Image (cartoon, rainbow, N blue to C red; front, side, top):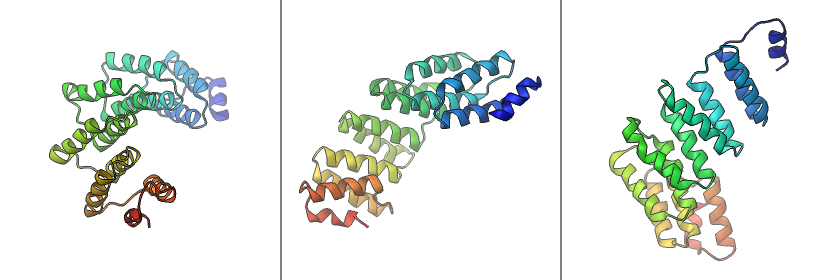
Amino acid sequence: MELFREMSERGVVGDTITYNTLIQGLLKAGDCEKAQKIFIQMVSFGVSPDLWTYNILLDGLCNDGKLEKALVTFEHVQKSKMELDIFTYNIMIEGMCKAGKVEDGWGLFCSLSLKGVKPNVVTYNTMISGLCSKRLLQEADALFREMKEDGPLPDSGTYNILIRAYLRDGDKAGSAELIKEMRSCGFEGDASTIGLVSNMLHDGRLDKSFLHMLP
């Protein structure tokens, strides 16, 4: 930041990469307000933001709980001639789901095919996680089946998200079946799943048949 200030004082205008690096650094440091000011300065100085600039800003706004501001920026980018990639949509779908606006996330997810954008495993996992957070397990399971039939194939994250959701919902048989399927695919329970299983074993909600989940 000090170097950037010196550059500004000397009348040296940074390029897009310079601004992207600075904005990303400020957002990682939790200074969302300053990052937004630097973005405004960037535009006012005639430095054109690229898609990476917007992805950085959108991700930072969503992580800071400023979904409404992110939506305004997202709408602006959509109206521009910039071609959005799946990373941009993943950021917004996750932001919506984390803010509890799972229906909005679902709407954006369903619009991807109309936009000619192919969802990747992160897109599916994010949407499945959002549906599970609202206890919409049938809808989440339908997406899971869609992945297995049409791709992208589920990964370790997909299985762990669903296993935790089934366990929290009290569906021991369903979670046991998923665990079996996950292990047959060469995946294992992650730290969050193992932690949940351990707690449920400890308080008696699960029996010892689930011990094989633990390392």
